[in-house]
Image 1 (cartoon, helix red, strand yellow):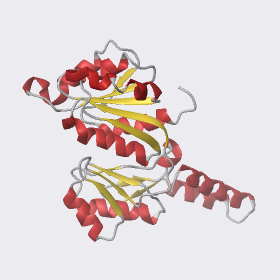
Image 2 (cartoon, helix red, strand yellow; image 1 turned 45 degrees about the horizontal axis):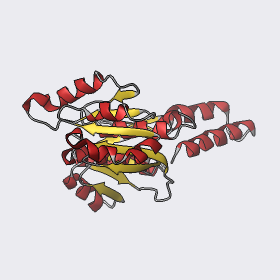
Image 3 (cartoon, rainbow, N blue to C red; image 1 turned 45 degrees about the vertical axis):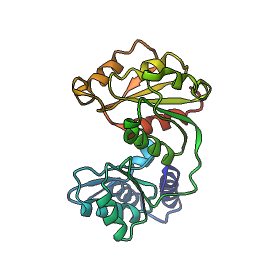
Image 4 (cartoon, rainbow, N blue to C red; image 1 turned 120 degrees about the vertical axis):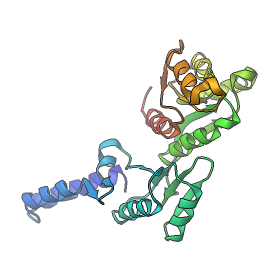
Length: 256
């Protein structure tokens, strides 16, 4: 179920009130009880798609396989599809598959999609550039999230500043992007370089890749926050999903 379907349900409910098929009090009761469902360990937000355009995403880390299964099953019972589960292990994905849940799993990104809608159209241009191959898990989390939400994604991996010619050879692709996600660990310089080359928004993602003084991504985070290039925003360390989510929103804006 997507944002449009939720709007249609509310409009249908209001039409039934207008036609006298349901009382205003009963309609109010339905709308009051519809927004979320309490499972005891999770409150599933069923109006998030109406408010934000996309449904609730399940953060899989530290949830048990049974908890994840129950949350997904409840969402499927409400007619939702394209249910995203982030930070999920292969073992949990295999468990969910054995529970007859239609699941697509991406091992590098540790992200899964339940009941994926193969008909989702991808539009625009989100470019994801990584400093190195070691940043790929974060890049893929961003890329897959953006693709599920309906963005066309172009991947430019291992184009970091240690060999700047690799990035400069892709300037035609960078120039046509509607939004760019720059993913880098170490000193995090890639975001500043890209920010100085393009006119579109740049989302910087610091990763925990690097030696001791990288401080598990803190050095890259601070470097990106202190960039002198304009038009750069920064998300949390290793947070590929948030980068992909906001990139999709920017990509789908009518004008930038």
